[in-house]
Image (cartoon, rainbow over the protein chains, first blue to last red):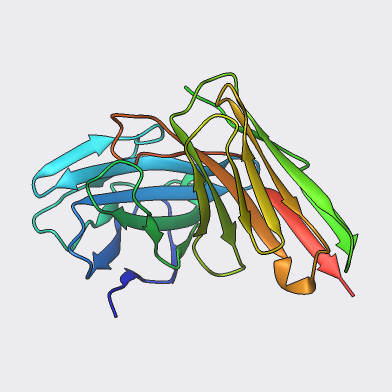
Length: 113
Length: 112
């Protein structure tokens, strides 16, 4: 079955370190998204991509970057981790047509100490 | 920035009770989705409503999209412990290629 997987599922890192969260989907979806989820804020969009070599900033993109070198993967990089980036991160993907179902990964719990 | 406010934030009820969760915005959305998220997992889509005034039913769950497409509600009849979870509404606008704006969430606990 097609799926979307995230790794690592849990990570503790130190302030200032670079961290990369991986996201891999096997649906061949063009659209991929990264969200963070925090209490009281719901899910907020960090970055998104509509296809290979395309990346766009979401509402909370500062301190994060993404790259899309193929259809299947959209890694999220925290350039210099900060305590404010402690959160649960969700990757998601969907087909190109507007309104199609968005499928979420199981989440990556990141703690910055 | 478009905002979606959900109420209540937390709800603890007993099995068999009915409940309604509200999702409100000052912005108009072309469609609205409801998700349920269980601990340790990502959100899972329950329903999409696209027409103002639309009502959709999914077993004991009834979803309604406001006439002006600014608000939505989720009504659960005879809640069961399996309904426990975080319920999220999310708005979508035409031309944003599935880029959702999520509500703040309603955490529901149903006890025996």
